[in-house]
Length: 173
Image 1 (cartoon, one colour):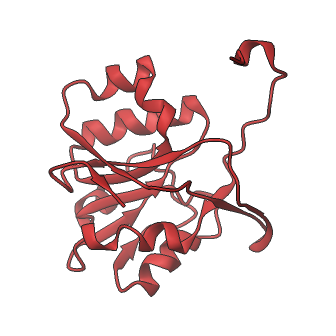
Image 2 (cartoon, rainbow, N blue to C red):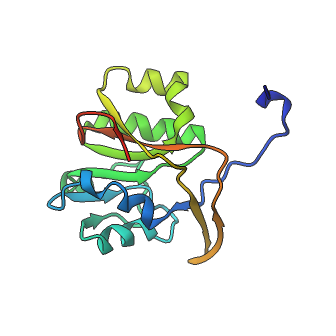
């Protein structure tokens, strides 16, 4: 079995974006009458926000807003927070802590291995989370200056949807 400590260091990229099909797969679990806050759009091309709008949702959020700063106005407008959170652990921890503190319904996409991490268990220990498990890998796109540069069709990890106050059981899709 390979040991990651023995392998060369690799770069962590937070600039791969979620495809429309990834959001389409969970539309049965997101009520159309709810206002979605796509909250990880900072410095992005706002593609996820556009996808949700195309799917018929009322979506707020923009690429100048840092979720980790005080956003009381957006918090009040939003019924549910949805995003693909950054891959880097430090950002992920901060976002998870803020989501738990906000205590609003959310759906986030993250690497499934995070479920077994000490920080994930500590941050979410008192919360009733459920998961939507895709039966295939979630793939991503890389954009630069709003232009598609690269598609990632065979990522090396499995992603899941982590849900809080949205569904009441684990689901396979």
